[in-house]
Amino acid sequence: MNDKTILNIGKSFFWISFMLGNICLFGYIITKHLDFAIYGYLLLCLGSVMNFMAIIFLIVYGIIKKDKLDVCLKSVKIILVNIPIAIAYALIGLSITSI
Image (tube, rainbow, N blue to C red):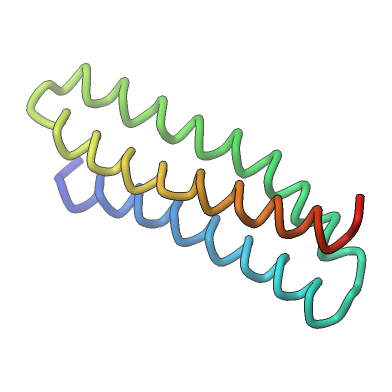
């Protein structure tokens, strides 16, 4: 893989998780339809697993291909930006739904 592909992996995982989280959070805020909150919770669980697997893949690939380690770690950092966003969205969601 070239450097651009590796960075695109991190950006793709970030943006997909971020956009789906926004859809779930703001979908619930706007419509008050409980399905958005349920899907948001599922996204939090399944998205965490998927992002973790992507991070493991990137780190292992970077270790195997030593010349790609720096770009792999940059890609991992991009994915890790979702953690504080997911925590904030989870807290907002929990406070809104009063669970």
